[in-house]
Amino acid sequence: MTEFEHMLVNSFNTYIEENGIRAISYRLKQHRFTPQFLDVLVDSLNPDLYLGIECKSISVDKGANALYFSQHFTVDKNGIHQIERISNYLNKSGRRGFLAVELRLGTGHGREAYMIPWNELKKNTLIKISNLRYRRFGVSQKSKEKEKNYRVDPMEWERK
Image 1 (cartoon, rainbow, N blue to C red):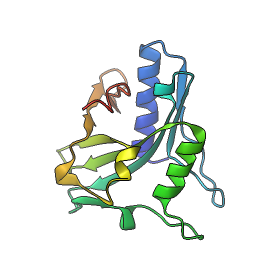
Image 2 (cartoon, rainbow, N blue to C red; image 1 turned 90 degrees about the horizontal axis):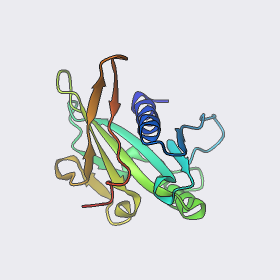
Image 3 (tube, rainbow, N blue to C red; image 1 turned 90 degrees about the vertical axis):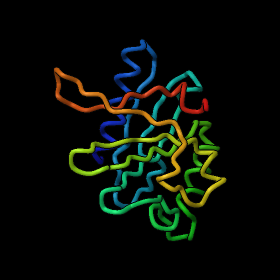
Image 4 (cartoon, rainbow, N blue to C red; image 1 turned 120 degrees about the vertical axis):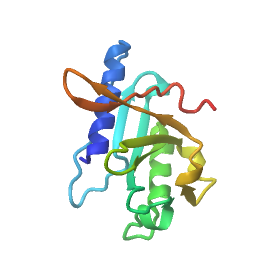
């Protein structure tokens, strides 16, 4: 599990606990020969919180200025693109899908993260970092645990 995925799972579970919601966020363990459809799942009887999230973390500090579908996503041995595989999974499972993009801004500048509704990915083949107009969710510092978590609010992500 990447640091971003770990932080996102913890952030969701904090949000769920603080709001008294019957739900759970988790990441399935990835096995070498077993396909993994999404990075983070949230299970809930509330359809707004029945989520599937693909995570991408890129370094703006190292010159990344866009998220390219040909570079940052995979194609399986049958030639099926990751976006298509995830779209099929979301359609069959009934989950709301999101692409979580974390921008690592470099030493001393922290990180930013954006939630992009999955249906927006069907309209684009390139997501320019400079043009991210999607709902940003910030980082908060937990003083007791000294652990950074993202503030999540799934109810706000599709509202513009």
